Length: 335
Image: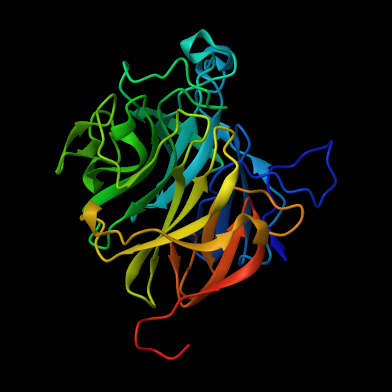
């Protein structure tokens, strides 16, 4: 078994891993950095995946003026180390008391940038949010009444676009599931108003309060909810394909049905993802495992593999713990 260091907790034993979202990683020189969140991101570092340090809390430039009681916590879900050395991070934010209900929120997504590999961040503001009139205030859902969150971010090989694979919880059935948005890579330094969602065959809807056409539809606002969510995407250089892992919720309490996989050769083609195929049932996770946040992490330090780049064999993590390797095979090749 392999475990992320996770968010440190003084009230839990050291082997208790706290990971409450996707855990992004990047290389800077010969150092691998990785982030874990439980309402706030923490960072660890090391020479490879097997030798990561204990995690330390990151700092935000607007932490003192950020009103947690009104604006809510922030989770680091994705990172990207740009060619100029800047590290971009995207966070999932949960404002409290949405629909005036203390038990519900509607997540949204913001962007930050760091000059020191993620120890200190400057907040660049919100870039993705659901429509204002798309809240299901009477939902039986345990957590969300609407919004956009639980996501990953990938940059195409030509560094032309930055793609956002987001979970959407809108009131409207036709806008629930896993959706996609993008912005020009050149707009990273100033992202406000530069993100556009995929809707009705076009990249035309604004990131803030725009509409979506899900690439994996779902049904969230009923007791027997059934929906894919929480995508984690990496480029697999062995397959020469993009690979997406997905959670699948089976009820309003988000109990996990299993982990699914899909493939696509081109991020610019939202319709190119293969039908999601189940690779692991919830019953197979093992005792004590968390049930959410599956992600692949590559093992080849020489190739600078991370959660966004992997090869034929990698580690499969669920909620920060790995009991499995995952091995990919190309059609026509002998396993």
